Image 1 (cartoon, rainbow, N blue to C red):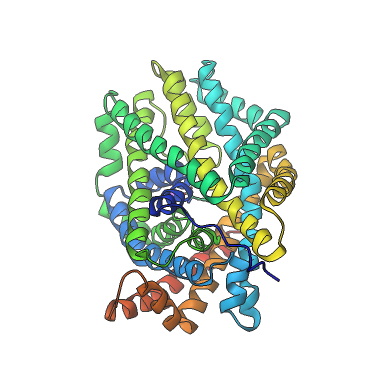
Image 2 (cartoon, rainbow, N blue to C red):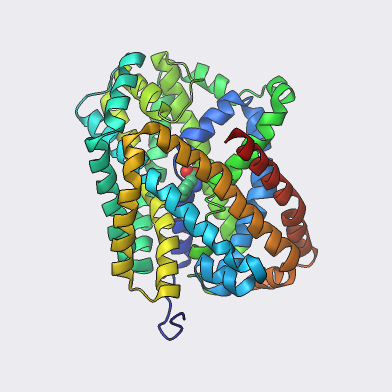
Amino acid sequence: MSSVDIPREQWATRFGFIFAAVGSAVGLGNIWRFPFQVGQGGGAAFLLIYLLFVAFVGFPAILVEFVVGRYTERNPVGALREIGSGLWQYLGWIFIVTTFVILSYYSVVAGWTIRYTILGLQNGYLADAAEAEGQFVTLATGLEAIAFHALFMASVVVIVAYGIQRGIELAVKVLVPLIVVITVGMAVYASTLEGASEAYAYYLSPEWGTIAAEWTSILPAAAGQAFFTLSLGMGIMITYASYLGEDRNLAEDGAIIIGFDTAIAFITGLIVFPILFTAGVDPGAPGAGAIFVSLAAAFGDLTLGWLMGAVFFGTVAIAALSSAISLMEVVIAYLIDERDIDRTRATLGVGVVLFLLGIPSASDLVLLDLFDLFADQILLVLGGLLLMILVGWSLANLAVDELELGIGDLGSLGAAWIWAVRVPVVVVLFVALALGVIQY
Ligand code: PHE
Ligand code: NA
C-alpha cells in the first residue's frame, strides 16, 4: 500500500522543476557524444537532422513522460501500475532496472572526472597520446577509481537524502547556472586559440555528401542521441513531473528544457574542437575513455592547459552530479511511494548497493563498456519504446487531457502530438532497438 496520507513533496517553484530537468539532461551526452557526432556526421548537415529528431522525436517523447508523471503523481513503477493493465503494469520495473545499471557505472565515470579535475590542479596531464592513454588506464581502474566512485556516490546520497526542495532543487539551482556560465566562458576562451577557425570549419561546415553516403548509420545515431541526451526512457522525467502541480504548461517547460540541452551540447563543440585542433590532436578518435585521453593530452599541450583542464573536468563532474541525482531519485521515489521506506534510509541503502554494484566497473573497463552498451542501447530504448506504444495507442485521450491542463484546448495540435508518438517516435525507437540488439 502506498502512503496516501503523507503529503507528497512538490517543487517549490516552476524553475526548480526546469532546472532539475535541465540538470538531468545536460551530461556526458552533451559534453562528449554530441560534438563528435556532429564532427563525424557531416557537420552542420548532421546538426540539422539532429534538430529535426529533437523536434519530432525528443519533444513528443518528453511530453509523454511528463503527462504520465503529473497525472499519476507517482514513481514509474506506481505510475505504470496505475495506468497500465495486464503485463503493462510491470513496465515501470524496466525503468528501475535501467537506472540501477546506469547509475552503477555512471558513478565510476563521474569519479574519473573528479580525479581528472585534481590531475589538472597537480599539473599532471600528459601531452603524449600514448602516455596519456597509459595514465588513463592506471587511473580508471583499481583502488583509486573505487575511492572516487565512493566519493561521488556519497555526494549523490547527501543531495537526494535532503529531498526534493531542500536537496535536489537547491543543488540544481546552484549547479545548473554554474554549468551554463563556465561552458560559455570556456567557449570564449577556446575562440582565442589559434586552431579555432580551422576547428569551426570542421565542426560547422555542412557536408551533405557525408549524409548522403552514410544516412543509414547517421539517422539512427541522431535519433538515439536525441533520446539519450534528454534523459528519456529511464523514468526520470516521469518522476520529476510527478512532483509538479497542475497549473504548469508542460509543452513550454519541455521546449525550454530541450532548448537548454541543445544549446549546451552545441557550445561544447565550440570548446572541444578548438582545443583539439590547437594541440594537433586527432578529433576523429572517439571511444569510452576518449575524453580522458585525447582531450586530456590536448590540455597537456596547451599553455595554462592544466587550469583549463581542471575547469573543464570540474564542469563535467558537476554535470554528472546533476544527472546522477535524477537517476537516484527514480529509485528513491519508488521506495518511498510503494514501500513506505523513509527517504534517508532509502537513500543510504541504495547508495551502498550502487557503490557495491559499481565496483566491477571500477575494476574492469570491458565490463563498464558492456554495462553501458546494454543499458543505453537496449534497456533504455526498450523501456522508452514500450511506454510510447502504451500511451500513444491506448491512453491517447487521457494523455491529451492531461497535457491540456495548464495550456488550454489544444485542438488538432493534441492529435498531431499523439500521432507523432504513435508513428515516428515508435518507428525510430524500434529501429534503434533492433540496431542495438544486433550490435550487442
Ligand atoms: N541526458 C544525459 C546526457 O546527456 C544522460 C543521462 C542522464 C544518462 C541521466 C543517465 C542519467 O548525458
Ligand atoms: Na543531454
